[in-house]
Image (cartoon, rainbow, N blue to C red; front, side, top):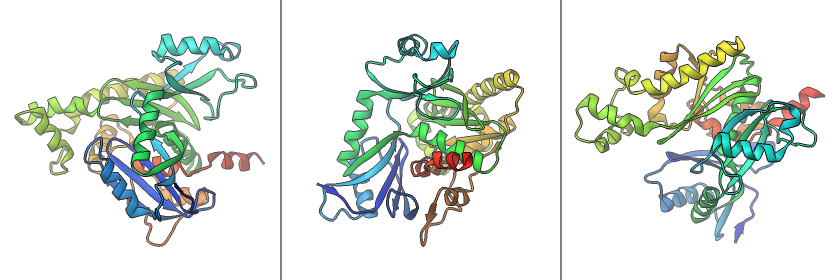
Amino acid sequence: MLNSKAKGLYLDISEFSVLAARTSGFKLPITIEALEEYSLKSPDDVDGVRAFIEGLVDFKGSSYFVSRAGVYPSGGFVRYFEAESVHKAKDLAYLSEVLKTDFGVDPESNQVAILDANNGSDFDPKSSLTKQLVFCGAPTAAFQAKQKELLQCGVYPERMELSTITTLGGISDYAKFHCLNNPILCLEITSTSANIFIMNRGKIDVARAVPFGLDSIFPLLQKELGLKDESSARKLFYSNTFDFAEIGPKLLRRMTKELQASAGFYEVQTGLTIENVFTSVLPKNLSWVAKTLADSLGLGIVKPDLEKWLESLNIEGGEGVDFSNMGSRWMSLFSLMGEFHLREEAEDE
């Protein structure tokens, strides 16, 4: 049985935490009535997540509460591709082969969406005139696993989105609203991998994967501090009890080099200058990671003024909701609420 009350529930669920918002509904204008975060104790912390959600919304005897959720499925991908010509880009058989040979993605076992890299809209091979594309998605089984997890937590996902793409849409709209006209280097880093993006005036110009993530830091941390094993290094890394300011650049040297390579090549190719870096997903106690990377790259950090941006999207905070101390990682949750096409349509009128 579903809870059909008018209240809205938005969730962004990463490997680190659950970001949640109870709202006045799903239809704009929206009032955010409550914002909460739950730090995951383990990858299968179903009971903890369910209790957290039950404390945020009223099930009233229902088995499930309807929600809109952003997820990070295992094997998720976002890849930029520029076809030889517009004609070539319209050939779905050709694009399917590109997915297989260039990116190692099997269209048969993956849920795949193709977007116009210039504006993020769904690619229509019949009418589109672009040759710059973005392939995104994840294995079908991984999406099904996320859906099952949500149901186990008492959540019925009316809509389930790939958070990586949703967040890029939010960054793009935020940059447009605040007139951030220079390209932005965006980083999504997880335990095992990372995604590097370069956004420029609403366009995805670069989207590439890095085959290592936070786990690659633990051997370095163990060696640097003389810890007994990698497990001890992991606990210290996430404990929020150690100041990483001094050794942070050494721990993140490999990631810094990847970012420098992507940014440097892009700037040489385009003649444009990247001024800011944006990091998503990472929990608050790892905010030093963004600062260390930005300092190493000589870039500023995008620190979103969330309240003004949300107001421009017809989303407001209710009594007791304070946006002032929220970092960039909350962009993923708020991006689930935005109808960014409405801004574009208004500008075209």
